[in-house]
Image (cartoon, rainbow over all chains, first blue to last red; front, side, top):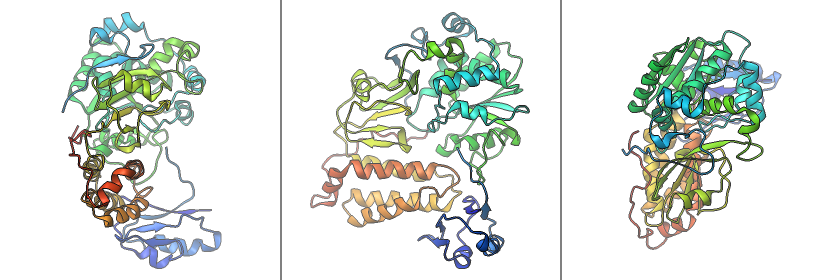
Length: 69
Length: 397
């Protein structure tokens, strides 16, 4: 079980994630990703990993635990 | 900028005890509050659990849970976040300026209990910093206590931005969501909380949970500090039992009738005074009835956009877009309203910190509560006929 996560301090809105993972990522009017927020299943993991590696800003991540105050 | 130092109390004075005589030096502090008892970590956890003490910086995170998430050993620092970057709030700098020993007792007491060698105090206000430094010289704590002045930008007060500033880095939140209790000061476990939280801890350690719980509401006993501002005759910081009705506070401070803002520029609007119990909010602002509410909110929208650290795209573009949308709404351009609706959906949850979320909450609540004004602005008259008086301060604190 994993979820896509964006480091917003790194994201520059290149938009590759939306091209590679059209089902999970859309782009807003400024070109920044909008995540659908659903769980990435085991079968989809390879595609998701490829998108993470393709992000030119190293902003897209797969996170297994998302924490926060 | 006016410094609000007027203090008053409804019910018991705990945090503000003795302040009718002015600033409490070491001797006056001991005279008023008595010595800080030495408690163990387990005792602090029990006390916080028993009274449901919550952090007083706005997020209201349970202190007992924060303590429980710290590891058994290796805790590096206790950090007092006194950056108070919300522009209306004055309670923290007031405590640091007038009752610095109470805050230091809370911080050093907990640091001893946790075995943390450092106590770090992040302060933005110069007078507050001076008062704390003076207080430290009066004490004989066997700890390294450091006071650091932090920049005043809104997001610089965010917990992880404060840690970054204390380490000598930029005062901006990092992109990774890490918990200070796991990776805080120099990536070591750290207990960080707001100034008032430490003052409450000092009071709680002295009173014990039973006496502490003699005021407030049963789920969250105790007192709270509120900064009361805006169209009120007696603005300032006031200590009340938790759960005091909003009405009581407004009447006590001589507020003009009209809409009320709770929780500052990341908070929510109410159309008018009500019996609503006040809990988990540190700011009450009365807008009054003479000023144009949407014009006031527009000024704050511009300020909120200017306070973005500039790190995260949706915050930079979204808040700038919203400031422009609100400007068009005020001028009677309906397209501003439609754009605002869309932008309000695009901002929350899309940043390294909660600034976009808080700003969107404040603006969305304004559109909801100022429904009638919205109709007047977007109708034939293209306005509500009232000038913008600047009741909502946006100067840099």
